[in-house]
Figure (cartoon, rainbow, N blue to C red):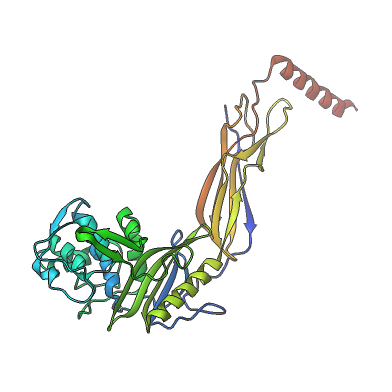
Length: 378
């Protein structure tokens, strides 16, 4: 087969380009009772709404997400950790670990993320680093690899400490990175769990099982940080991360997280951008054969923000020579959302076309010659 001139069609199919993503609440956007907040589309990184998102603030036990990430860089889930006496001495929220007790990394991860146990986080840290400071160095190195420019860690448990901070923006990126790991996703989606020593864990995430679509990720509270939380919400084909730092109360934090999540989801819609029952291009065939139509090999659905541009670009040959098999790839259709490529589908022949017979060629040449003579002498 020989392709002739390629043809590119670009057709806007939805709306007009929206303005840049808002970074301040406006209109009907909620305004939480908190120091900072940040709502982001997980797929595109688009900011839905935010306030003081790069301001450095304490994040309390959300820190444990970083602790677990670093620990899992150095351990397998089946590794067994001997509880360091320094971890067993830590106070506040604990699972009452005993010095010298042996637990798997998997159990300690659950203790740190579900119960938000300080001793579980510290036990993980001291199984990797010789001291809290040495482990903090690993945390800060990990922060740099994740692009967390607003973050600095001092303790693995998130208790208030001088020089320890992050931001709503960085917390969101940290949660995204953590949710890529299956053991983290499993832990933060659990309302309860039982680990070694018949310890029954209970989550501090009040939205799990209450707000539709919430699948995690981590709460935090200290006197210095206030009430903090980052949640992942999966609904209507979209995943949003919603972060609130420094809310005045647990109930304020929960209410505002839900309000921001509902607002964020409402800013998007699902569009059937590529359909299989539509002809995207008509390709010429020789010898008077009826043109070939190109159809999409598979459908494509995209979630796009309200008011955003959605453009399709079709690339196909102007003509082809048979034989052509039904379903043979001959072009592509690309979908762009606000100028960013979000999906591609192959365009294939809607029917088979056999090699032209000699009789067909003779008939076509005879007809063309007759038409030309008629034009000359007619």
